[in-house]
Length: 284
Image (cartoon, one colour):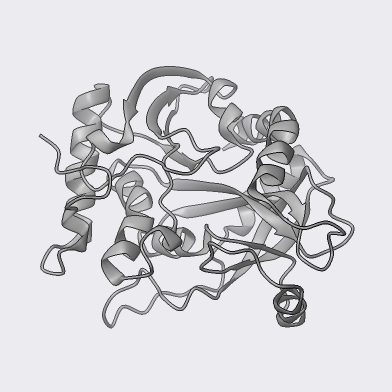
């Protein structure tokens, strides 16, 4: 019986509990529910990436996320809200997480940060050595039009928090594994690379904030990925990060921003980026 739910009690918010142990419990429940005791690769699918799950291989099991300890159902349009076990053409197993928890859903409390990265820790406990993180982002480079996929080469964590607890010193020099980025570029040499700024949200940035982010070295801005990537590195996983530019950021876009625009751009680009990611996964 899982200890889960939508936004009720969650063991991850109990400071006396070890989040790694809760991840092991979640991984055990996934193994029981799917009949698969080990997954090789894990993917978190963000806005614009949901169609990839039907292209990469055969789904053998699909579980509502809230049935697994520590997970909650996705309340964000554009996210699947499920956990799937997929067998890839190369016979590797992929754990596909369509239920991302965003920092803004819980106002940044440390227990909620644990929820944000729980999927990554569960994937690591399930055996996955590679974590693929995807999302939709606002483009700061004017040349990157909506619908453009971009490799994440580094990030700025501007959330004001971290999933790393205690005196645990993790090297973040290569958060996004260079060999995986090289592999992705061998599949599609046209792929650009950029620095992602993760901000807390849920409001979009002001034009002045976007100019500040540009000055800090950011090429795109979003409300996810960086914290998850940090947790993945702590777990010893290789990380591939992919942003889909779903809109131009405030002050660069000539029109006001809306989540409707993000969803529409994601839906339009979904076939292309999903096929791209499917080709990349064949090589991992």
